[in-house]
Length: 600
Image (tube, rainbow, N blue to C red; front, side, top):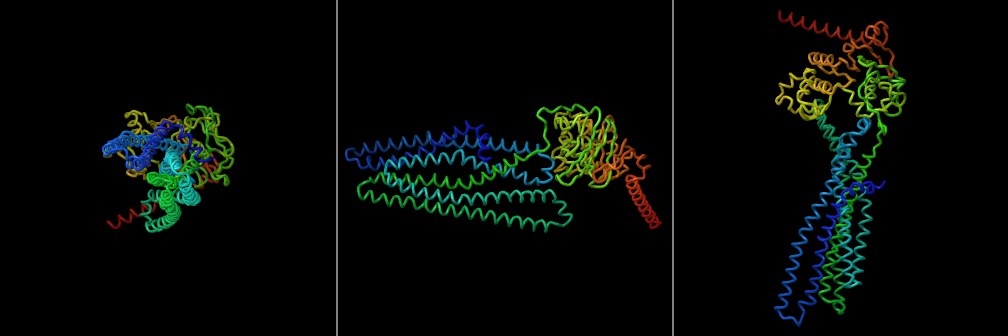
């Protein structure tokens, strides 16, 4: 669909503001068009009148001057304010509405979209592309129409003065428009390329800003700078190409615009010499030809603005039209609480639609139980959690909660019953209080503190500079890994869900932090259904049932003791980890003994 057609509903909601602004524009532009006619009257009648005395001429001159000044001050100036205020107010409201829709779309998109696209590119849609539409709106809903009306009005007055000269002026203007229209196609093409690559550049810069610390650690600053230089050089070539195309357009059009008044006046002088045109009419005609230059220039300059805005509109609406595969039914059911079980019924899934990550996977989780998924990296363990939270939908089979397909439930009610703690929990750059209260924005202060106590986070939060009001920095950079994990657990305590997902929740922590987090997890398990993903098997030995995942299928399941008795794949993993642990402990003991010998 044409981007303008998709944009019209946004503009339609602000039509009253646009009409007020349009009315102000009409008065603002049409009032000055009376000046050449007044000048014509002064030259042809007042100044050359032989019947009027000097004092009468002075009186009439002062009267005309007073009226013109009064009209300009009393009407023209206020109409300029009306034009600017209401047009900008309408534009600002539309920009706000577009940004709200883009942000809502970000929340509606599947996890797959964020896996396939850089966050910097999405940010470009929100900021740069939407802002480019501002100039487009001014051009489409104000400048183009007003300048066209002014041009037609001027042409009509000129035609009444001298049709032949008017046809000459119109011919010259038509050549300008034809040339501008021809060159605008190239401008639009280069603009589309430039704006498309700007998204790539924004994504690169945003990614490098996020990974600035990593760049320092791996001393890749020089390599990053070289990559940026290559991106900037390519982007500069694109902007130069666009600027060159635009410059050619302006050079050709402005040359014709500048020579038009002289050609028209030169031709008009012949009419004056022949007595077919008065001097006052020629001066007025020259003034109107000069007046034609402003709307013609404005219309020509609007071409690249409209071209750039069209590309930006297309980009924004393409983003808003991004298909979403995880959808709710028209009348979804509400999941109040997990009351029975979760069943994976012959589930198959792939991220790219080609290579299957899960194959015919089936298992049952009873309410109140603790379950663990273990196995090799890339085997599909975390994918189970992605499907439980409906970040993705299954390709085949079903996921049932309380005997009902989870696709029947509303996403809000489903996710309200799920709490999740991952290996690297995301914290916003706001206060500790705000990060905990994400789970329940209207929570009372005492509830937030109680949740932090249960997560063993209250004591360390009290030592922070501003306690619960301390800003944690981008992604929680001011906190340690263990502190971030405990804040994430506090969120879960505050949310009080019936299903808790733990994805490598302690794998990256030191021993002290791990003990605190494990103690917190033990507290939260009471009366909840727990699903754990783990590589360290020592963290799951107390699970009611352990599912061993290998290459997208469950190869073994049972309690820790039952799995060891099978002496299968789980037994191999457990034996390897224990052997590595014993070896590490032995090495540590040897080092201590050596230090004691040296000391002795």
